[in-house]
Length: 120
Image (cartoon, rainbow, N blue to C red; front, side, top):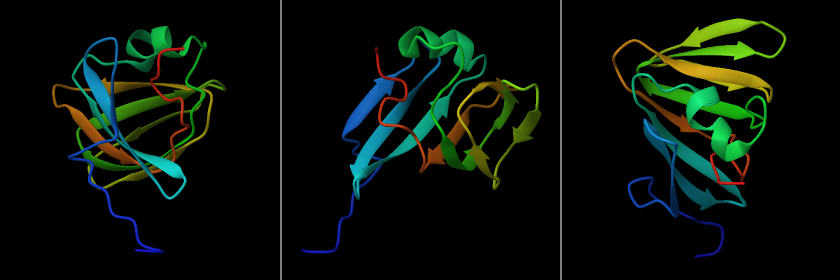
C-alpha cells in the first residue's frame, strides 16, 4: 500500500512509562512519532520524566491536542500558560509541565522528539 500508513495508539509500537504517574504510548509513522500521553494527578515533568531525560528541563518540542484534564507549563524564561480539553498547544524545548487538579491529562502529541521519556 504505497503512500498509505495507518496505525493505532491503542496498539502502540512502544510504551514508555514515566518514573510513575503515567506513560507515553508511541506510534512511529511517516518518519516521525506520535504520542498519546497519559499524565496522572500529581505528575510533574521535573519529578517524573527528568530522571529519565537527565536534562534540567524538557528538551522535546510538543504540538499537542488536549483530550482531557488541565496542564500547566512554565518555560525556562519564566513564561507560563495552561491548556485544557479541546486546546491545541505548541511548546518549544526548555520547559517544565505539570497536571493541574485531580483529573488525568490525556494528550495526543504530534511533535515529540524521538527520545521523549526514554531512559538515557
